[in-house]
Image 1 (cartoon, rainbow, N blue to C red):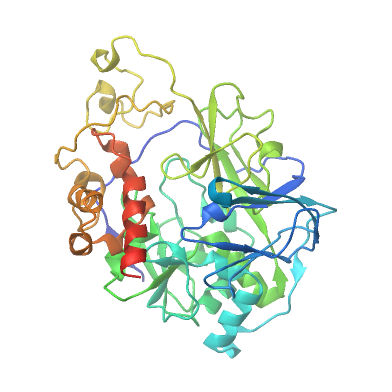
Image 2 (cartoon, one colour; image 1 turned 180 degrees about the vertical axis):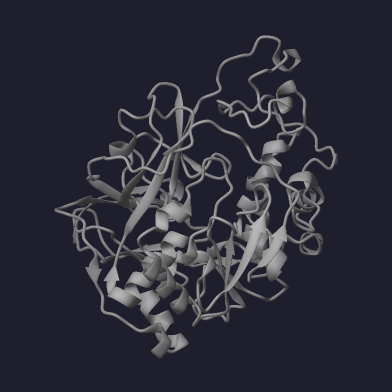
Length: 447
């Protein structure tokens, strides 16, 4: 019997464009890319050059600070481009595929008979260590540190998020093998939504299963950590997503390095929302072509709260399992907020739509206002189910008051945990950007 934790704070954003549990068909992508910008604090060191051939599973670059952490090519082909930005920072390493994308043979390893060091070595050798993110800071885990726990959230409550019960179906044994391997690193905790969840999640062995009930952000792993194993000063917790647990499991149980990824295409501007089978870092044009309205549309890799804007021929984010298409909110509104707003979603009952039950809305990217002074109104606390005062924490970050930031719980949160605070903020604060600045400062000053 799993523990049950009920969360009352939060908010479910009812956005149109949810996908049914069906798979769409799309041709395989020709280009694939790994983006160092998908990883906080990463300083890449290139191991290949433009025009060079690379095999599937070959090393594209490593982390300068932790050279044992490798980033591998998902396909065999030619390095098409190493795209750089300001100060020659590497933005994308693009590979043009040659031939069919197949799993790479890497040799099996039974987790039950392996030591912790052998499991870590296997994950580093196969590049799967990059799936493990470390709290605090949400950076790639340091293999030299002791880890307090491993957390896996098997459900996502973000708008139009993928159904991981559906995504993992058929890979239940690989998921269990992944849990077995991760259990060698630290005690494993699995967050589920309880009734209706896959037995692969609720019945997982070598793990503590905890059921969470409530609105978003109940599915955020940071919220689950806060209620099960809060992070104290000096402690380190690992997080990993369900599809990545499956990929880890296949390495140990089948001896195969599998870069496949199921991605759900959602949003108001999608003609037929559906799931697609693709590969990590794939160019998304083959998926969204003829399925997403091309004019005046913003395509997001990830969900609408935390995802990153990409071009229609851009690349899927490394940890992303979702693409969302929204209309750009560039149009001016007659009467603005004075209008009845019968088609507007409101978190604060500004409009009468709160009386319309579970109606879904065709939201766009309009901010409905400009940034303004912070007013401590308590609106952020209503959507953050953690023992944290978000507005006070943000003020401490902006003042660069490190002692106050620690007192107010900055080690407990990352951007996704406070994304709803940004959505409901009448001050239009860039909450996630402010928080990331604070986390980066903490990494520099505290480590």
